[in-house]
Amino acid sequence: MKNIVILISGRGSNMQAIVDANIPGARIAAVISNRPDAAGLAWAAERGIATAVLDHKAYASREDFDAALAQLIDGFQPQLVVLAGFMRILTADFTRRYEGRMLNIHPSLLPAFPGLHTHARALEMGCKVAGCTVHFVTAELDHGPIVSQGVVSLLPDDTPDSVAARVLQLEHQLYPDAVRRFVADELHIVAGKVASPAQPAGSLMAPAP
Image (cartoon, rainbow, N blue to C red; front, side, top):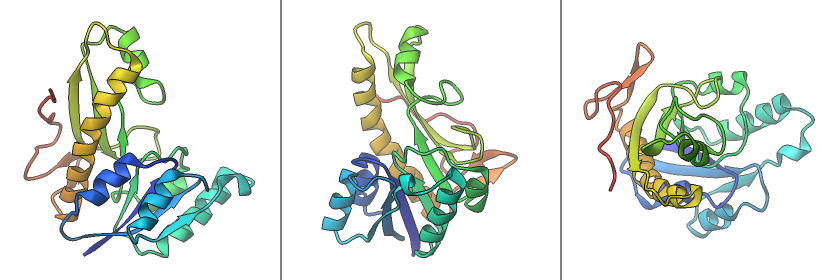
């Protein structure tokens, strides 16, 4: 059984998708938020999952917050840390601490469009597709070995909100599957790329409708 700690800042829809997937061999040890009003905390608590709040505003520096967060996380002895809408830029010391065992999902086809406003930027550039990327977290923002990607077509009348809605549905499929593969010891980082029995390094998952 692998313990998983999930970090959220809001409603945590990807957290909910992972919990609802009932992944064999996985135990959601805790859901932690940097925001006391994060709606996902109540959702997790209602399902008997331990929750905790560590308000970043109470810390003088990013380094102090990350050190306290790491101490809190380690109390649950996780094999995997999952970022599910955790709206904090993490320090290099923190990311190194969980290197190879911390996942994130980003709403673009990385390395394209790291950072914010990904769908608006894709539409402005005239892209024909958009999507999302599950990746291992490294010190460089929205980089790190790619686990999986999913694609949606961009339509002539699309808006950032309409793209976001379709991509979010795809995220709810990809993220639980990535966690399942981690728990099953199927993900291996080789020469900076992720390889697994189900998906060779660098491959792209089938496009979503």
